[in-house]
Length: 405
Image 1 (tube, rainbow, N blue to C red):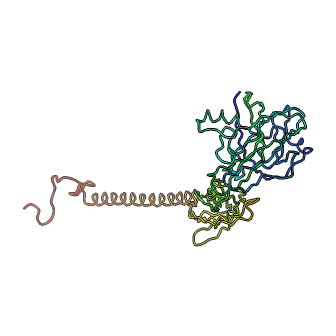
Image 2: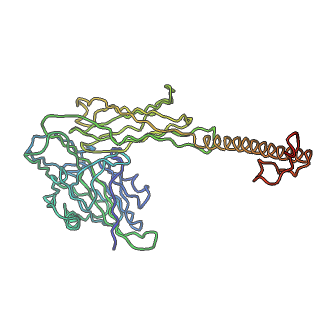
Image 3: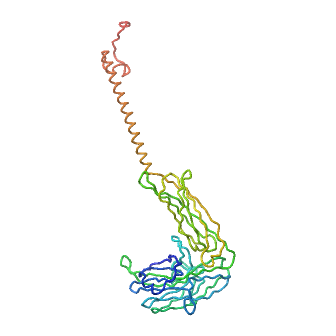
């Protein structure tokens, strides 16, 4: 069967849901909610729902995530709980995976199911199962990742409390590392063409790990682009747009509040737009931020200025020193194309009318000159246009005092 890859890209900071409320959620929804024991629904025929949450050997302990601060070379031991809320048995693969930032939404997410972890996910062994893969090509890597962790089968309404260890390397870099412990469920579905496909659905809980050492909070702005979307109305307004990439360039997990200010020529102010805040941007994570300014007249030039004010991340990061705000600016053309086309059309019509009028006058003047020459010739008894200026000289009859000499 072909395999459908399901990335984990749902924001992962939603309160816990109780089993009674899980069954009401729509079957088939793919959840990737780390720190969220909300259900992931697989095959609609079975309506499998399950959760993953921090635990003790006796069961869930109310934590919403794993949050550790350790020295390099340390080993952390803890427990994770997987619960099957379904009415049928279900088999799950439980393993650790590196965390990253979703480029589109900015939410906390995990690397793909066929991508091997190289950081905190590779340091996390669930129930003594394998946690990492050697450096291999893509096909071998995908095969290796399918065997990471442990496989468990849960009867309806049962739970498994699993031990795990997180072994921090002695050369681990200082600062924040992020991962998740995932319970993956494989199901079969039918796509729009009627073909059967394998669907991998995942639910997990977050791991925040801070390694002792110097902290260097920092954010960066790149790829800033400003634009303008006009309308066909020659006197209408358009929308100014601004987009850029926001990257955590430091080693500390942080949040950020981007703001964009737009002005036109001569300092005309179009106001500021506050974009949705970015939460828990992991080190090295990048998200794309956009802002729109409707009702902007096309004044040929627009000037945008972006300011990003960093804030602390959740958990242990709340007490961190903040990175300095960063700014960037860009210029965009806001050309009133419809108005320019209309103006050019009017100019063309006026120029054409003037050209036609000038040409008509010239033709009239030429006709009058020809007519005047014809009258003169007839008055002198000569054929029209038969004087010296009209062609080569011919026999002439001379008159006047010099005649007959």
